[in-house]
Image (cartoon, rainbow, N blue to C red):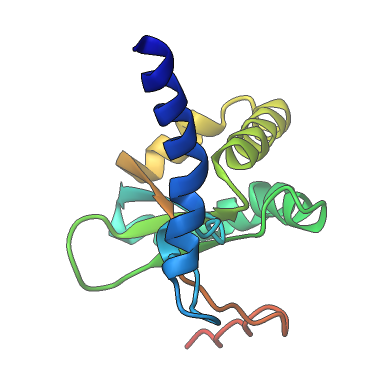
Length: 158
């Protein structure tokens, strides 16, 4: 009896997936749930002092941006950027990172953080002079379309 149950379970494990594929119409798109993710997006939001935003941008551009740019050139990150707003809630300064998957993001971020700490041992205290709180969000991308035409031009400052 047990042998018959095991044979039935084995047959079901082998045949049912084949039968399910056979039920799909020819040329049907694969199930999006089984598609590989186009990557991950990590967003770090900060509550920063509005009056010091230009100084924070300048510090980030001089210290963090060169390291992150190198990680993109080495294909350890797909992209990164800073975004900010003049109107909205208190989470007014953000950094985003795009990577192939979470393990590659963590490896790139560890390298970024280690290099930044090596070059600027006091960077956290400098950063905390501008920003008082932060929160991180990790997302798996489900759809995306990105241009490969290069970086967006920097807007002219008034």
